[in-house]
Amino acid sequence: MTWLEALLLGVVQGLTEFLPVSSSGHLELGRALLGGPVEQGLPFTIAVHGATVLAVVSVFWGDIRRLARGLLARGPNPEKTYVLKLLLSMIPMLLVGLFLREEVERFFTGNLKAVGIFFFVTAAFLAAAHFRRPRDRDISYGDALLMGAAQAVAVLPGISRSGAVISSGMLAGARRDELARFAFLMSVAPIAGANLIEAAGGGFAEATLAAGPLAVGFLAAFLTGFVACRVMIALVRRGRLVGFSLYCAAAGVFSFVLS
Image 1: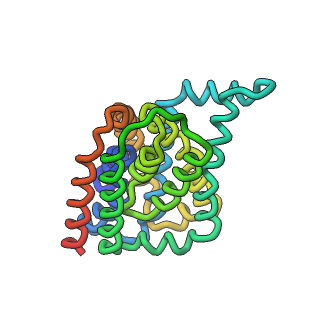
Image 2: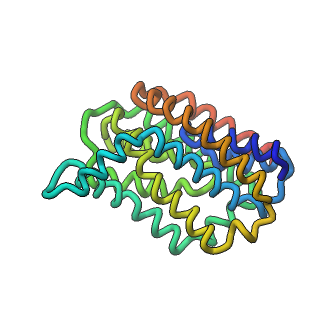
């Protein structure tokens, strides 16, 4: 992978991580169009996902500090309840990481037919959420677990993490203005953990991808992800996601054609 290819894929990751169109699916399409070796896929995907986690931390730094202070305070408080919901949402992703890692990795080998199917799944998620009447209910523990399950399913390329998580929250009836913040905060620990596991296991060192392109992709993903995160927050509050359903359906068709 050249530096220019890494730059382009990093921009794709940053723009698509927070928009409900599946960043991993677009990375698979991008590698297919650029002709990149499939064995470079997973380390690069994990690295640029780490960059977008850093973008989330930057956007929600004030919320993260408030939650941290609440955890250190004595007695029960809303911050501790919120963190408990975040931890509950991470359980499905933890189970996938512990028991299904090898199975997930098989989908990062340029299988565009599978990517196309998963794009259609994302389109269905978004379309269903569009027709759900908005409700003004706080996120419950059950909602957190449901959104965590959606996040676990979204490890597959073509299923949008933000799309699946936010759509599941909408279908459950949670408040839209709270969904985006919860959905992005719940992604921080699982994706950061995936980066640490990959680094500890030597995955980055053993990959054929050089450090230079990896760094370029990381920086591009962070800068574009910071902007896209703020845009997505505004879109969720307005409930304007149906257009992304049509886009994902078109991406699914394109994946089948390209395969």
